[in-house]
Amino acid sequence: MKRSNFTEAQIIKALKDNEAGRSVADISRELGISIATFYGWRKKYSGMEASDLKRLKDLESENAKLKAMYAEAALDIKALKDALGKKW
Image (cartoon, rainbow, N blue to C red):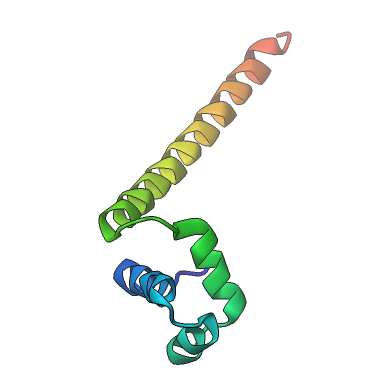
């Protein structure tokens, strides 16, 4: 997944500017992003403060680590079951 070129603070500032009355086209032109990207940010991050966004990123990274750990454990369990299931 591609990493964003923008910090959490920049994303929140862009969303706050839009709420204050600036048009989406002006904000997206200034930041060099597409309007679809801005609406994606708004869908994902609307109503958040910078601290909330940092917590969300931390939880997403922790979730990814836990998924990787589960996948590895599931493979180990499957290998053990296959080994024990064979007749000697």
